[in-house]
Image 1 (spheres, rainbow, N blue to C red):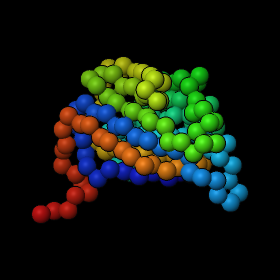
Image 2: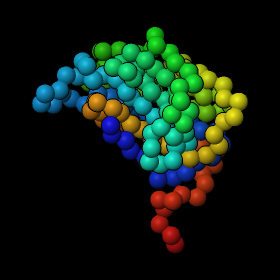
Image 3: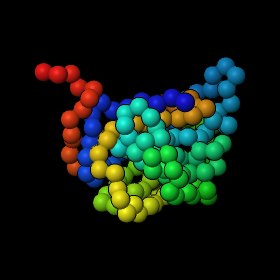
Amino acid sequence: MASIWNKRCYAGDIAVDYYMGVKHKGPGGDEQQRTRDLNAVIFGDGADVNTGYTFIMGGVDGVVTSLLKNGEVVAQAPEVVVPRLYAVHHQCPRLRAEKVGHTLRLYFEGRLAIEYEDPEPIGSGYVGLWTRNSAVCVPRVTIYAESETDSRFLAAP
């Protein structure tokens, strides 16, 4: 597993727009098999991808898209997968993970992939991107947040 975390802690409504693609084929790699797990975390603890809300795009060998809350599956969309053409043509699809009020959504190329209403939403945390058994590139990430809270990663004045 590989993950990267933003240094800032966010609260309230949040949206993360990110482009993530399969890295070019390397020695012993098969990009047709790796087109999966283009994942994001919002309101995580900054270290563990199973904290906060985890959006898994094409997990479980590329066949299940899921939303987890603190490591527990709360919604799935097994019919939503990452098309193999993204591996062949080395494209970086646009994904968007968002929490607005009690509603969480994941979009893939502008289309709703998964939606969940959380009766007890998580209020703050860190943003991360991650993958499992894959090699990805992340050319661009934009975070829109209602507010920023203090961050454990920021240097003291």
